Image 1 (cartoon, rainbow, N blue to C red):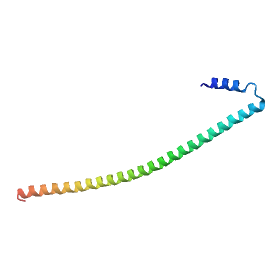
Image 2 (image 1 turned 45 degrees about the horizontal axis):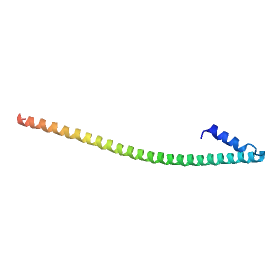
Image 3 (image 1 turned 90 degrees about the horizontal axis):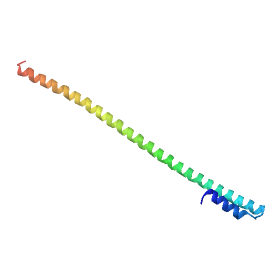
Image 4 (image 1 turned 180 degrees about the vertical axis):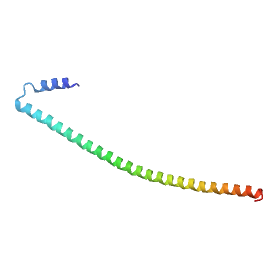
Length: 104
């Protein structure tokens, strides 16, 4: 039912009613509207709390992943440094072998 139809139905119901009855109907509608606003506010508050909880959990997970990535970067850096050391030893060993072949 559209709002216009609802208003027409309300007007039809209220015609012939005394002012006190109309005032009662207005108070009833206002009370229903206040209850709906309160319910909507409570639902919004609950949803906001859920969003905040999710955001905190996401922030914790992000920090954990960041720390893990830092550890992996350090491991890679250490491995690259060790690889460079080993490559230097290989070059030295190759040079030594060549010198020995030449009789030096």
